[in-house]
Length: 411
Image (cartoon, rainbow, N blue to C red):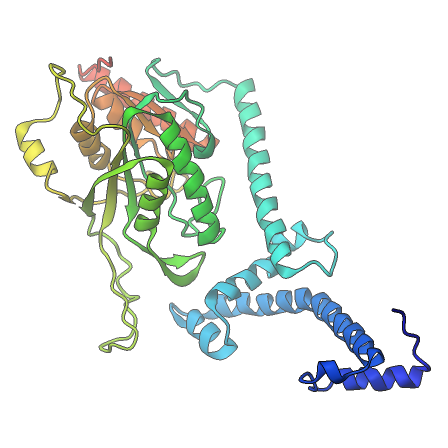
């Protein structure tokens, strides 16, 4: 039905009535009133949408300045108590105001919803990283790496979501993935929010299950929990989420080893001081989740292991205590684990000659230990820089061991 209003004055009156709080008796309103009210509310929604993006950017600009000025712990309090929004939402507003992100969305329609703007930003950042990796791979093909490794030691560029290996090849995966903490890696900032991070975890888990052998095992090193998600305080059970994702992909849970690293310096953010109001307990440990495919018992009778009885006694105690590791240099992976971690995992859960995989290669520590313990190795990382550094580190290890008279024999 089409209703023609009698005059502009009538329409103005109906619009004024639409702006009132009279929403209880809609059935009692005539057609002209309902049409005018519907049109007015739709116009207001459009106007609010147009203004929302601009206001969100302006809020984000101010939050960025505030965050730069704030001392440790102040910013979250300002956001919650003074601005009266969640730190998570504040972080999204700051993303909108980031000058680099403004360039990524300059051509969007001003009426684009804020949530969609954020999706465009995240998609653009991922595509930029892919393009950078493609350019570096092309350059690498034109100029082959100076480091040549033995055939049983393979290090190359790849994403864990697309591991370039055949199904069922790997005997043991030993790795430590990104934690979703916003840490600055060579080709990513690990800062897309925890929900996006979990979507990666599911894809990574599926791919690692695919390449694991019929009795493939995985030792995955992650924290028990993380306290910050993309720069704001938001505790997340990352260990539990990883174990859940691995089991959903098909792995079976076996055990957990608690690594008492005891060199974590984040000891000040303990919440309310001397009060039960808002305490925050810091877990000064990391976890090594052990899962497997098929049957746990390898039943390899007669195959020689390289673990001693004393090591077996110590390492089957599920609390491992040894220090962590620092980055080799400022341009290396910022979060390496020490050689002791993969050494224990390799010798406790695999035999010499087995195929080892680290799909988050980083500094290449797992590859170094795989060579030292006579295993075959595949290591991958998205970063061309990290891959080249890992190849150089492994090559130096090989040269040093040859010089010292220690030469590995992999099966």
